[in-house]
Length: 157
Image (cartoon, rainbow, N blue to C red; front, top):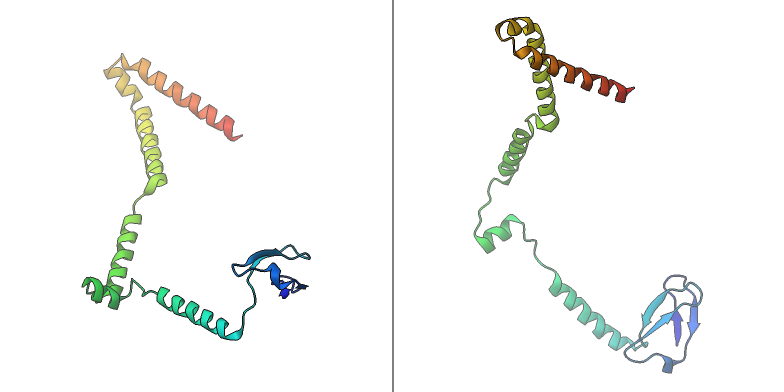
């Protein structure tokens, strides 16, 4: 029997008795490719085998489960305006994504805190005159803010 490697196209001579009806795993001595070799049979048997394979392949072909016709026939769903549905989904995604998001919220919080501290700094004298006990807390707050500012500038440079 004459075998031919599918990878490197090298040909080998093997005795017919070495290959049984159930096939045998063979390896190319040149490139190392492995494959299962079945005995060579006559043309009539080849035609029968190929006909069986094609009929099996034909049975395996399935319908597309997402076509409008299939959904209407199988499940009774009537999808007339599929383009309108897609446009509605796109519009909902745009509306959903039009929010500030995480970084936008952090930015707004940062601006709010800066504004709050600026107002506190402007009204610090009036607050201390009306509530003298608050002077310690306001001084401590600005001391902490100054420590944070120095730490951040030290990290950036």
